[in-house]
Image 1 (cartoon, rainbow, N blue to C red):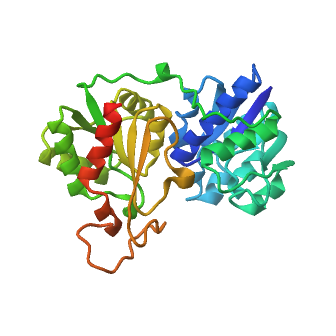
Image 2 (image 1 turned 45 degrees about the horizontal axis):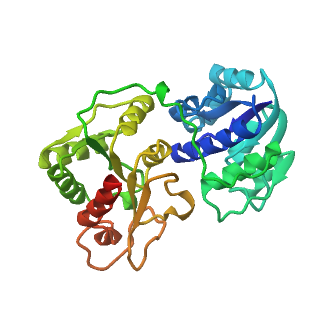
Length: 340
């Protein structure tokens, strides 16, 4: 059986799809997948041994100049690649109008969430087979159930297995034992205070651990350098591709991070992790897997799910809710999972 997956973004959402492939591989020996994914995340599907072909798409880049992009050689090449094979099933695991439109370009039975389950209900009109999946489930479990319904095997009951082949990572020599701090994220309200990272780094260093700080843009690099300058034993990593960074995460004794895509990669690699949630909640999209601790702010307006903090009272840090998630509390949680 050959299946095309459409799950283009974001980083965490792409990672959340991997356990469904493992389920299908166990239930249907010989099943193979192709996967349409945003070019920035094209490395992730290659980590699963059931994936034959990754088809990068560049919607994020193309939508900046939509009319020019639709007439480009790049768009024509993408459509040609997508139409080269006929699939038994095409599964839209994203449930958006844009992902549903991509399924129309392939050859095969189009499957997806029904109108009450999809993130954008109109997307369901473009599928030939639609399935009801409860919206209050964790994202990993929703996708696992969608695959089971579409491909015709019993929904799994055991904890999901990401099925990642770690031999595909680029090895990086690191000074062990080490921890990784994932300090970078997109929303301003998700950022843990910089002074807290420095204090946590000092606590971890006093306990005998080296600390490594990855970064993805100039703002994150500058923050990492400030933390490292204030906390001896903390090192800023060079800029890395996802394969390299996954290799670093895989070798860590533990990870501390905010609500960010890299935290989901750490969870997928079964690296013990402490993830910090202030404006957001782990209930439906938190890190999923073994050895995961979710520390949630205990504040009057948390989780607010806002990109900007709107709290108007006095607060010693920004975002205000993080005053309830101190470095000492994070270290206690790290110490607990390291002791396991």
